[in-house]
Length: 441
Image (cartoon, rainbow, N blue to C red; front, top):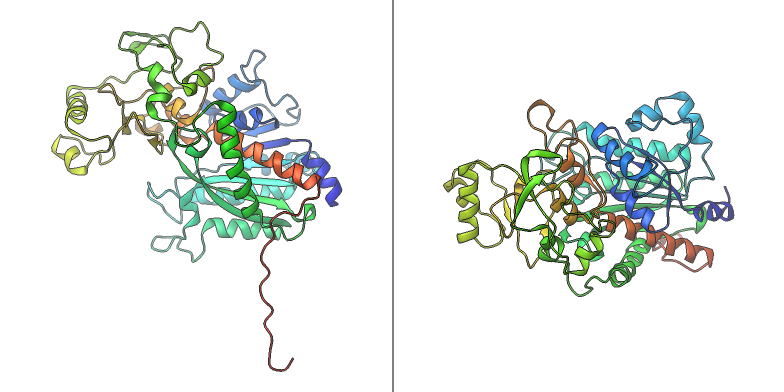
């Protein structure tokens, strides 16, 4: 396909969301003017959240309106799609119609906060995504993951001298893309959380030869960082704080949780910060936030939390403090109201509310991830026992998601890159290696 034809395809702003989860990246891309063709998500609970928010007739965020008739609107793995011969034929026929493929494969095998095993089979899913790319060949590819993806596995089974990011970049280059990567912090886009991620980008080489794709994305995201926060009325000189993010969810009057009558919740307070007001759009008249169920803590846990509030500084609680107070876990954070949260995981019990001796709720997690309050979550709140780590409960859906405000920044950045390509601007180029001369020349 010629560069001219690829640019026409890019300008369609049509994307496929692989490993879509509950739809964080899709929501952000939608808000930046992109149009979803379809989304792939294997977990029934996460897919229900995606379906209810995007696909149903009365969805708050109508999207994926041109979902192809040959692909069922149901949970499935990317392997289910690729291993179906008819689906592969249909995917190949999408060349020229899809502008981008985006995906955030499961990160547990890469995460420095987990076991970090090179032999973890989930590490291979990024290459399954590359196979999907090889069939559709869109002008753009974006892959999001934890920064641990940039580090080689050197001391565990599956050891390699190259990182998965380096291998992925090479595979994209072999397919004819200019590829690179950048690391980003979600706080720079208005997310009240120091969530550091790597973004791998591929841009078809025919659009402009010898592009330094990583440098181009880095430059564009830096500009978008300021523009996005200014347009949303968020501070540009500092991160959004936890208190700004969730203060209106922190009422002291307990009420019955609407979807869990055996649990407490709380009514909305008046939103005071611009961030809270932004998150509250679409919830006018609502009294109790969705998915704002409070955990039931036993005496030991509640005593621990009360003592943490009385004696400990905000931030990660020391191992010695936790052990001295009867808990086996070594990872709990007392939220600092004046700072953003550290990286959210799928476990709300790692975070103690800054004002009350309780875990944060799923809705508070969602606020910290930049999901608006009219984006509802479905399925069980939490999972224990045999299903933990297999099914994706509400808290896991939120913790695994690409923050919508980060997704929006990615979409806006690609819009800017497309515009510059359309204007035939000279974009950042890869540095040419110096020619090695011999004494014979």
